[in-house]
Image 1 (cartoon, rainbow, N blue to C red):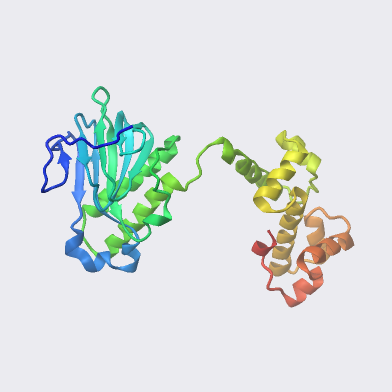
Image 2: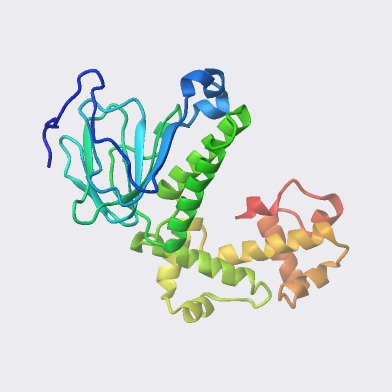
Length: 312
């Protein structure tokens, strides 16, 4: 843990210690936001906008120290190699391939590449009124543990470089703001593979299976056998993620499809019932009215403000 930022070659005028860059293949763009203040103040830009962005490959001897921090947040993504980020009062954050870290604004810090295996990083400085909408504080290492996630992030950074290499227009400023939000969303909001997300994925898999077997009169036993899960466990995760029991949810899926058929076709009630596996149209009608509040004939004749989305 680093309690203090001990300067090396501190320059008071800059309040920043830095080793001049010059990494082979580096890309770095500083956006002159002061010259485009009307763009920055646009409602769609002011929410989130970058001031600097760059890519440093194999950044041997890369070192930065800012005792007072800077106005912007500093997002760093490690593509390969390793490096360390130090913030007073916090354990050192060691970034390796696939790790991301965001240094909060106005926070003293120091970061540097590993001398034996220097990192290759993508980085961006940003600020805006919506920074508080992302879980950036307290800072933490976030791992992107899939090739697809890494490819998406690198693609989004490439979009930033392409747009910033072109004209500075309001449209481009708005576009950049949206891409930056996607970058932060990819890191902080897109679901990661973890044990805590497993029940959510299981519910998703079961719902997809239900949706493709609407006419099969599935039972809880069927679902337990199909997914090798206990009935009590399936009931528990469905109640948690859908607020319905599994079979109640399945019935509502079937009634959603019934509503669709009744609205969009001239099918008779018994035909809709048969298409959903109900051999007894009267039983189907009772279930439909219990869920929808109208009989199938009333729903088809008079229409309804209830949409399928509201059933689930």
